[in-house]
Length: 94
Image (cartoon, rainbow, N blue to C red; front, side, top):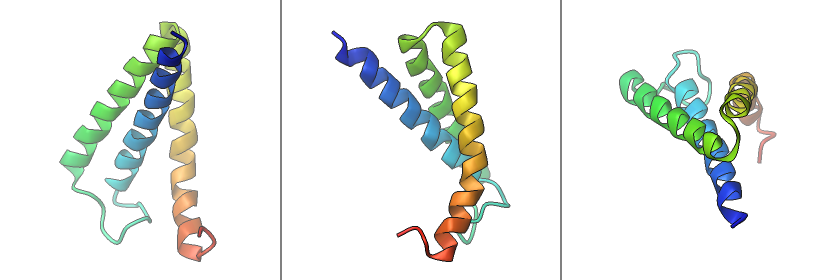
């Protein structure tokens, strides 16, 4: 069934994106909201989502490849989050 690995990949990437976003929104320096999310709850949610994302990637790739994709995607999203907030505040994003 070729659909199952593809869905695991989609769920893994989505879980990692939501986990990184939750981690970013818990930061005091985030610029998406007027106040950051509660630290403990947001960090626990981020940790759970990141772990689920990594496990989904492990179901699709070998462990080393899954860790590489996880770290690369995390670095990309952690770099993009502040810029997406600035873009949103400038009124250019929709």
